[in-house]
Image: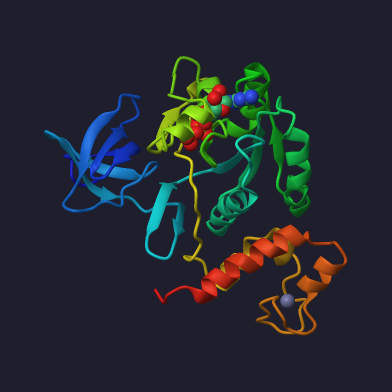
Length: 302
Ligand SMILES: Nc1nc2c(ncn2[C@@H]2O[C@H](COP(=O)(O)OP(=O)(O)OP(=O)(O)O)[C@@H](O)[C@H]2O)c(=O)[nH]1
Ligand SMILES: [Mg+2]
Ligand SMILES: [Zn+2]
């Protein structure tokens, strides 16, 4: 409760620019606008609303965490106050493991638990994809295999224990089946989905804005965030240390390199590079680490 009786707490469930939808707990989306020029209100934010025509977001309450990315020229906040990030990949369209790896890093850097969903397990390419993702499993991430469209009952049963009582965000490239999954998990919702060829020919993504959906059928407090597919994922918001800690297999070797501030690039006595040589760390994971590190070091100063 606040001292100002005119204000009420709500959660942002959708937004575009300054216009948002807020939920007061009754599940009915209330249109509202951010005060002034403020555009940094995102899905999952807890806000204080002042009622009126329209209702106005007076303030955003402190966030538990913020999922975001920072490229050379712009930063983008995906959502706030998440309990779980589910990075979705599929054999079609051709998987981009660099992007998936980056989404995982962004979540880890904010201490948000992450799991990986391999959707479309009915496709022949699913087994090969699983093999490609083995390094992530070795690093400690769970791989969840399912088929949102081809086997919805199994998908629901498999995901239920992950989702129950949590606010989970689906993140991944366009066409991997995020919205299909939301429809599978929340019957009756009917979020728009599209065949990949139709979507790609139109040159746009099917889902155009992040949206939070309640999924009370899956347990009290359960919510799912659907998001537009992304094509790039800069991580320039991270410090070198944050980056290293976002790789569980590198973090595990913390303190074992000869130099305390080892970047694991070329220093002698590097325990991380030694582990790559003996197969303890997958070379694809090391390559991702080095790519992102290179970008951080080359980034324009903040
Ligand atoms: N074969 C197969 N296709 C699936 C499965 N799940 C989803 N798809 C298909 O994948 C295509 C893309 O699905 P969407 O749910 O629109 O993908 P999205 O990730 O939401 O895409 P964006 O909104 O553009 O980011 C659709 O044609 C779905 O029917 C599955 O389990 N098996
Ligand atoms: Mg979608
Ligand atoms: Zn090192």
